[in-house]
Image (cartoon, rainbow, N blue to C red):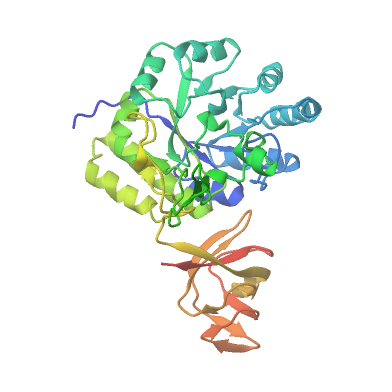
Length: 402
């Protein structure tokens, strides 16, 4: 394989809170995030408008860029609150606002905020890209329904930066414009409240009333995008930024995916990238939460192989099982009090302790119950647990099952 070094693309990771930010800080160039309003991930509530400035400071202190997603539909009643949010964003020196609704674009431009056009805008050609540049945008996140050849054409004929998704969940609808959740449950995906009906198990009914037995298949659940095997082609295409979806996924996922794509990008630039390494990285990412992998639309329209028929939400062989909650932390002895609400624990279990600012992976090495050291304990008990790092009250404890 011949390697022609291009400008290194910016790696942009999605994060939901400080724990996720800390998980990827060593391997990413930028992060994108949102508050609990005006984004397509309203359930990512680890950052409030009141704490936005502090979060942006944390990002900049780590030497990376921060992009605020304000990419939901804006309704008449939202205008005043949107104004306040963008005013707040301008005061924090956020590096860009990710937007597509013209109301957001216009107000962001009025406040001299840098603007990246969200994939929700479905930018699919160079004329549209240039249109958004004329409005003041500096980057467009292209539609996920484009092929690599189409992306090359757009890059060749436009003066705006282009960003494309390289990893993460894929939506059945064009650029995420889905109304299925809104129609079925009154929760709009276009306002960040998708219930993901496409990930459900569905039943087929024929015209005569017969029911087709699908044996637990998930008919319209798309596999995750994974382009780790095609980093050379993406860089050669001149793409300016690689985006990873996953603001609702756990910090362990964020850490692993960022590390793998950083290694792949850096290896390409050093001339050491090869398919053996790419497949090793892909296998490592397959251990984190995923729905199986495909290349999406990059090399043509996806076929049946791009659907995750056999899996509901997670194809990884490693599962997380809720165990309990941290009720106190004792830093002098590196121990935590844990209430076991769902499952018991025993010495040797692998656990994750996770919260808005916490992410700790470790083995259970010591359990104290009612003043005695024990090897195992059942659900419903309150225990003392030795921990290897700082944890906080209300952090959740999960057992890792392989």
